[in-house]
Image (cartoon, one colour):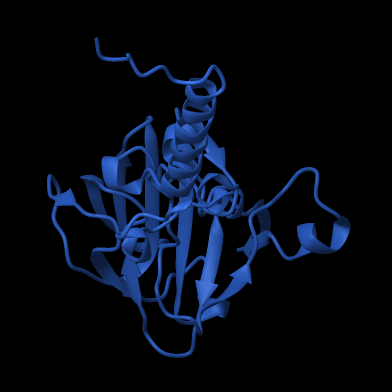
Length: 214
C-alpha cells in the first residue's frame, strides 16, 4: 500500500502569504504607473473660474441688451462752445450756459459744439426722423425719435443729409455743422438738445449710458 504524501502544517500558510505579497506588490505597481497618454493631457486650472476670466461673457452688445448713447459727432477736435444750463451748477458754469440775443438772456437748453472747420453731425442712436425745419433764427434743424421716448434735436446745421420719415442708424451722418442767428458769435457749430418724455436733459449726463437702463 502506497503512502500518502502529506504537506507539513506550515507549508500552506507560507504559500498563501507569498501569493498575497505578490498580489499587493503587483497592484501597487499598477496604480503608480502613469498613463501612456499623460503627456497629451491638458489640466484645467482654477484660473478659468476666477473673476478675471469669466466662463460666460458679460458683454451684452451682441444680443441687443446694451445700446450706448453716442455723441452727435465723431471729430475729436470738436469742443464745447456753450454748456447746458444746470440749475445746480456753480456760478461760473452757469455764466457759460447763458444765451444772449437781442437784449434778452436765455438759459441754454442744450450744448453747443464748435470747431473752426465744418464737421459731420451724426445720430446718437437708431431712430426715425420726425421733423426737419429751416428756421432763420436757429438754422436747419433735424429731430429724431428713439426708443424709450427719447428725442434728439440737431440745430444750426449747414446742410441736411436726411429727410422726414427716414430710418436712421446710430452714427449715421445726418448733416454738417453750420451757423445760426441766435448763436452767431459761436461761428461754425452744432446746437444739440436731448429730451425724454418731453423733459429736457443735460446730454453730458447721458453719453455712454445704456438706453435700456434709463
